[in-house]
Amino acid sequence: MRLLKQSSTAQPLLFLMIDSTAHIAGKTGLSPTVTLSKNGGSFASPSGSVTEIANGWYKVAGNATDTGTLGPLVLHATGTGADPVDVEFEVVAFDPQDSVR
Image (tube, rainbow, N blue to C red):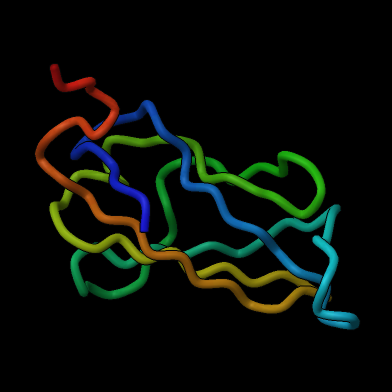
């Protein structure tokens, strides 16, 4: 599980789409349908845009609305010819990227 700072735009939500035929390789060229659930709420479309990175990896752009609620943030993605994917993030009040000395 990846930690995300509340209301931050710094980190995208990354997810891997796997080809539904062999269930091994990443599936490219998709326009995935993505929904998010914030802290157990109903699933809804993200505010950040969804784009392909490469090799079956995709991202939802960092968006303060998407990370505005503390607690679990669950991403659900589907795409034609790909297995559905679910990823859980945890939205926290502190910045997990800060170094502590």
